[in-house]
Image (cartoon, rainbow, N blue to C red; front, side):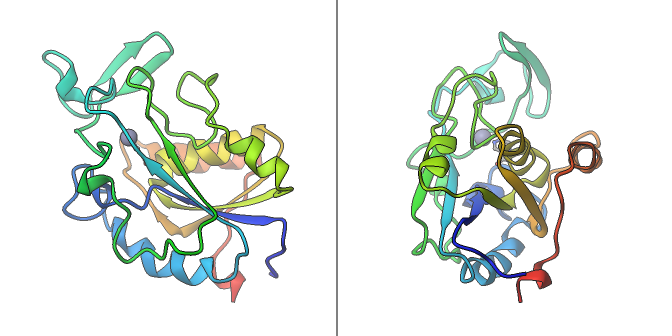
Length: 208
Ligand code: VGL
Ligand code: ZN
């Protein structure tokens, strides 16, 4: 596969809190870093996303009485998983993993900044209405095939790829350069959803 000028690599949330030792560690999260750096060299266009929450964020279990991480609550926009405090704006946990090559990124898109709405997707917040601006950025730059890598496969990568597909972009996921949280079967649900939407998963070797 030859990467073209209208392709973009979207590197989702490769941040300390999602890596080993982090507040919301995804098993083997940091193992995506070498693969992502290798793939990124092939792309002219790279976007990094960064989960970036205020301390009073609604997705933090600590901000609700008698709630523990990984419990669900109902918010105005629907069900929401409660998470451990993670990726707080300006914290070390919110920094990109030190091994990630960030130099070639044309855009760093921060998300989850509204205290009352979570944002898994890089396109729309969890109310499915509030846009992040990424779709307009990509359209204006005529980038139409989007390759997704990063963390977590079954949350932010999943919802970003699905929203991209619904917005009319070609969305492709490089699963070998992702790792999942796997909460209540969420990895299997992600595979089923990608299959029904026709979102392909491609291997890393396709790029070399
Ligand atoms: C994520 C849970 C909460 C992710 C972000 O990056 O997948 N998951 N915030
Ligand atoms: Zn988050």
